[in-house]
Image (cartoon, rainbow, N blue to C red; front, side, top):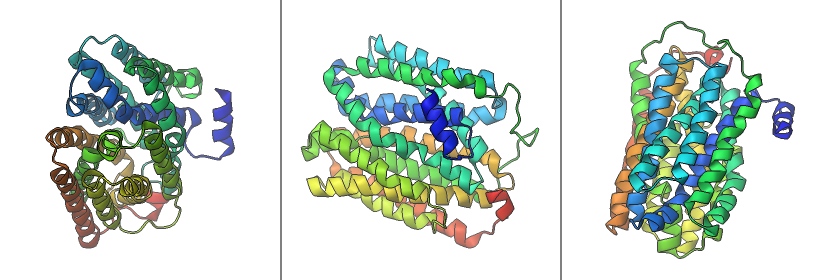
Length: 378
């Protein structure tokens, strides 16, 4: 465990290594979800759309944790410990779950731990371009190696083996708990402040973006296997390529450009992924999604920070509303997927993302920054 800590220290990252490792651990759980849908559907004899409820439940827990953490908790050691404990319990409970309903309940508990991890990392990074890049790049880095490993585990048996591994992964940050301070040294304000009107519109747009995107992306593995005819191994490699091309986008140090333009491009990819079941198109779309989406997201975060008087307070809000979109997205996408309506599936997802992109462009053009460069890059 000391090896990744030393690597992170040597990379001169501006976020504490144990926090980044906790975020990486939670990212692995999220990445595993698309690969669990098919095995769970087979295990409980339900449709892929019904099995997608585990994603909805997990993201519901994420919303609850990320939305409330910044209001009632502080980034201290005892709360960091809750991340690992909840993750271990949730994944072990998932192994012995006798029904899909109980499994979904355990995934909700898992989502609580994931939300705490995201809040821990982003509340220290939000509003600072370099720290945001350090935090954002964790997902793509983990995403390079995780999909093939998860696909291999899932192919060896049912989902229980994957949940056992996820329990170990979720508990790994506890080995570094000594590096987390016991007292709060990061929160600059004693009370919370309301979001500005512009920030509220941006948060709404982020909700719509993730709702539309997740309606398709969470079923990427199922679409690739059942509709496009690709093997799980090939699909896992495409997910790894998606993560690989995300790295330069997440670490981009110059201006990303308007977030709305990038999200509009992502909306086109969403339609292609859901509606055009051609292997070459599927492969291109899944890989390109990584670069385009990770160019868009930091740009949206920078816009939100510039339109917020207290940017660091919007970190949990941004993570919560994006997770909220991911709660409803899989439910809508799963219903359309189960109904065998690929065109409607793509149109609904793409239309939702494109509307959000237009909203972001309007906010960027019609409003002015309330936080200067010192607030964004301090």
